Image 1 (cartoon, rainbow, N blue to C red):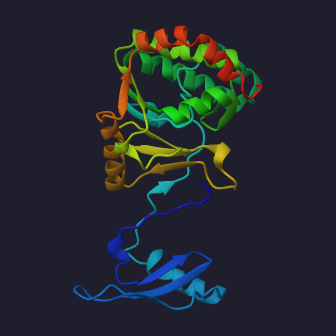
Image 2 (image 1 turned 135 degrees about the horizontal axis):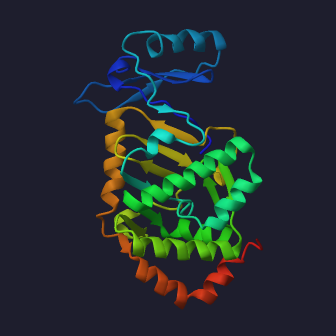
Image 3 (image 1 turned 30 degrees about the horizontal axis):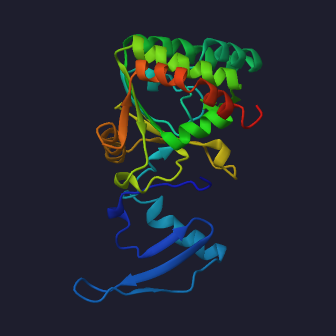
Length: 281
């Protein structure tokens, strides 16, 4: 959550035998040839600024073999991202979309003019998406419970905490939208032996099947690292998208219809009111 990574095509670095953290350290290593016992040898890490700068330049940034980092920063409203009609979202901080209109109104009222304009455009965009787009929403159950308890969302670069009543109304809006829109599906991801690598995710994934980006949970960040990353490398984008897209077909991801969600809201109304009030919001 507090580190920033740049990925390079390995063919440009395969002969370097160096592990470098820019401006921090460098380790030189060697491996035995295939067929021999694996041996990892390294020299004592160098932290001399002059050495680090000399080693960082070639071949990482100044040769034709260097690849641009496939993750770029992107803040705020991403107009081009929503110009398609198919989306896959893995949401680890509740569902920051499909918000009640009252929440949008409150966000707009308390935001500066330029930011309020972005939020209003996002509201209009989502009205169009609900009407005509295909959207697969995947929500891990532990993350969803955390959202009910905290009410925290990151809407583009705007942080907001929904009140307990707004959170329950949010669930009702989601249920109505799932019932009324044939193009939007919701899958809840449960912990299971098939997905033991998941503990408590803090990284959400968003894709329109042309481009993808990650968004960190800002509550879990302890530094000034960037919360947004766009994947611009096509091969990496396809690998990551295929991984998340496959979740919608996995046994640990259970589809939830609007009728089912409405029924659960009625059955667990009292429990929901207690959960949403835990943080004293």
